Image 1 (cartoon, rainbow, N blue to C red):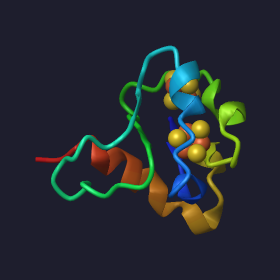
Image 2: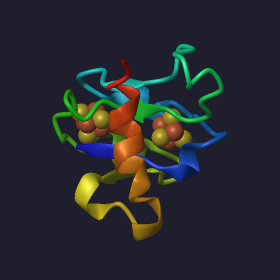
Image 3: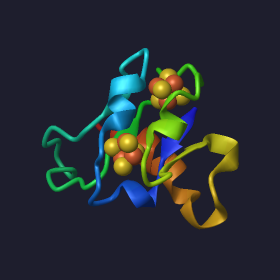
Image 4: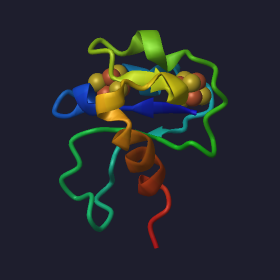
Length: 86
Ligand code: SF4
Ligand code: F3S
C-alpha cells in the first residue's frame, strides 16, 4: 500500500484524493484522537497500489510502503491505525 507521510502535515493539498480510483484516501472527520488531524491517510486495505497519488502530491508526501524514507517509517503504522480504531 501507499503511505502518506510527514510533508502532508499542515498542507493537506488533497490532490491525491482527486486522482485515487478507489477513494481510499481520507481526511479525519473528527474521530476520537484525530479531531485535530493535520494530514490525510491512505487505507492500506483498500489501496490497489496504482501509484496515481504519488506524483499528484505537490510536497512529495506519498511513498509506496517499501520506499518510505527511514525517518518516516512510523507513518506506515499511523496510516493503518487511522482505519483500525475501536
Ligand atoms: Fe489510491 Fe492508487 Fe494512491 Fe493507492 S496508490 S492510495 S489506490 S491513488
Ligand atoms: Fe497531503 Fe499531498 Fe494528499 S499534501 S492531502 S498527501 S496531495
